[in-house]
Amino acid sequence: MSAAAKTIRVLLAEDQTMLRGALAALLELESDISVVAQAANGREAQRLAREFTPDVVVTDIEMPEMTGLEFATALKESESKARVIILTTFARPGYLRRALDAGARGYLLKERPASELAEAIRRVHAGLRAVDPALAAEAWSADEDPLSERERQILQRAGDGRSSSEIATELRLSEGTVRNYLSEAITKLGAANRVDAARIARARGWL
Amino acid sequence: MSAAAKTIRVLLAEDQTMLRGALAALLELESDISVVAQAANGREAQRLAREFTPDVVVTDIEMPEMTGLEFATALKESESKARVIILTTFARPGYLRRALDAGARGYLLKERPASELAEAIRRVHAGLRAVDPALAAEAWSADEDPLSERERQILQRAGDGRSSSEIATELRLSEGTVRNYLSEAITKLGAANRVDAARIARARGWL
DNA sequence: AAAGCGTTATGACGTTTGTCATGCCGCTTT
DNA sequence: AAAGCGGCATGACAAACGTCATAACGCTTT
Image (tube, rainbow over all chains, first blue to last red; front, top):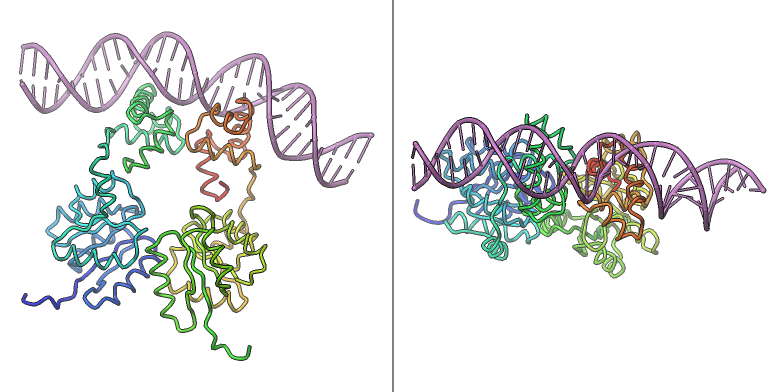
């Protein structure tokens, strides 16, 4: 526990194999970083985190089985000491907010240079934060998610092209109730109709 | 023109900086491959292809300014001798078909291991093809795009939440005509409504 | 010249969607 | 106990949507 010579043990969770492999190879070139495990989805990552006790976890958000945000939340509630960096395509304030709520220390965009990833890992391992500055500023001034859980469920399905009656059957609600929720969601988001509302909510990371 | 010792000159077009950088670094580790130029969109790639005359072009499809498919088509119609590999997230038969029509020699998915990329580059440079086998089989049996150009235009906008009257105004059509096209598209795709139709068309690479 | 096809249009009809007022129920806060 | 709130419901109405029949026009294929 004396010097700084110990390598940082990293778990990499990313469903796109090519990106995951390329990043792992790049990180291995750094003398102070070692990728000790790789996962293609959140559930696998959860298992590997228990097994390998990494210092830092780098995870995508949108993955099959379990999202990176759910994984981060699960880690926070476990006894794991791993620090989490979210690595995602999406500059959505809602995602950043949820990431920080889930205890993430870093939030990095895939549109940034690969070199920033190693830097973020070192910062986070040292106890600092690593949040994209532009995004952090935007998130500060961004509106909060105005949708209730029900509204979210219903808007999701409507955005996929389901009719009100289909949604009502699926969620065991009356058709009128579904229309009420959609109407409210449309108003809250300032949208023109259900599809527009779904688009807006998705773009802000609320869906 | 005697031996095989010449390095393969590659142009890499991919809008996600982190992936582009990581792949370029990985490819540079191969002794017979050299990434001579990188582009973040199709238009830039087009310019760089003229300037650097690469042997092989590796390009994403969905990029700003100009898609990889448009870029590939432009290359085919120029005097360029570069051979094209499409590198994309999407296993959509429609994309593969359009890629081959655009003269692409390779079609590789981002969910494949990074090692396959170097292999595909070598194959394509040697005059062979490099198409994901599973996808090629699927594309063979896949339906052809049933949509007319007008139907596609209108379906795109409908999928973004625009109303019939908005679409009509934008495209200088009567509202009834727009509804007719949507009705036809819905029928052709076996969809339940316009949003469902847009979803289906997108999933097959027809939009 | 005739047939076929894509594009555009109109009118009419039934269905779905979006809005609003009103009300009930269970839970928490006061 | 009363007030407030979120979830759920009903009914009514106008607007938007989806379907169908019909038809004109221009272009290509036969």
